[in-house]
Length: 375
Ligand code: PLP
Image (cartoon, rainbow, N blue to C red; front, side, top):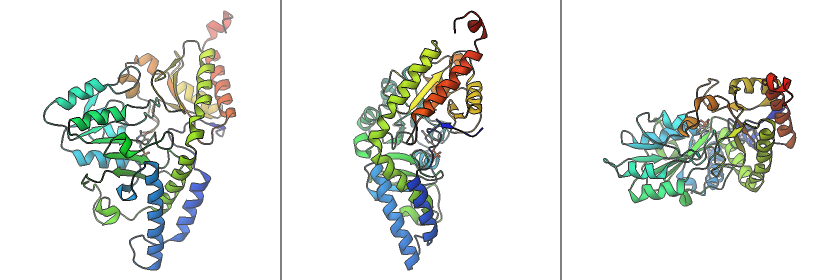
């Protein structure tokens, strides 16, 4: 059955019409932004215009922004800059941070899903002085907003630069490189309604970034390769619309809260992870007790509802969520955790279909209670 309720925006958001239109226009424009002829100059103008729109999303200057092939490359580029130095990362980071520096020291999370600042401070005080701290702004699984401003303050006092993976936060909460106090910030187009395969790393002026990809002078010699202009144009259009829609995005919390409240009424043993901390308005990470996440995801898929089990970013594989583990959630409960995430085109009907299908599954998995008339 075709998907009738798409509730997996944290995996990827549907493309915004303005982004699709901008991409198709840029595709027909042609021209290489590095060429000196008229076609090249037109492409360059389009590229630099797009850079301004995307930089505005992080209140950064256009020259500070390097376009990449996505959030993963932006994270790898940021961490590679600090290697082989000591790197401190929060234990809840995305795999594209954790695996970019497997030797990085992991700062634990508190049970509410936020990075433990006291532990960060202790690690910062140890010798040799760390080369980088990496703390995401919003977690992709729980939506928990991390205390990046405070982490950056501690790092600054220790003379250590900070990278912030803002891939899930961009377009969902207001962002500012300077207000966060970080020196590197990662963005991704497809999480905000742009195309997949495009992202950006925003770099503070005083940081001399080393390229990962070499072989061309593009992006101020910080990332070689002809720029993906159609993708970048789509990114810019999505960034523009996402910034305009920030207030509307905050209102998604009403729909998310309704999903959580009604899910709790259906399944009294329900756990919502990260609910004690400030969270993105769109994300609910819930566990139906005793029912594996894969079973829920498959049953919902059959009913035309798309959600994911734990983190779906990496692949279809089902492994215990390292984020929930870091929050101290027991494996048995974490095995039942699904992520419901809303976005720019979410409707009340999507929540209704999710709740009806989820209630049906809950019922089916509790034949004893049903027989005893308790359902
Ligand atoms: N960082 C976070 C927090 C994510 O959720 C994702 C999602 O996949 C990424 C980075 C990677 O971004 P991309 O898919 O653009 O490579």
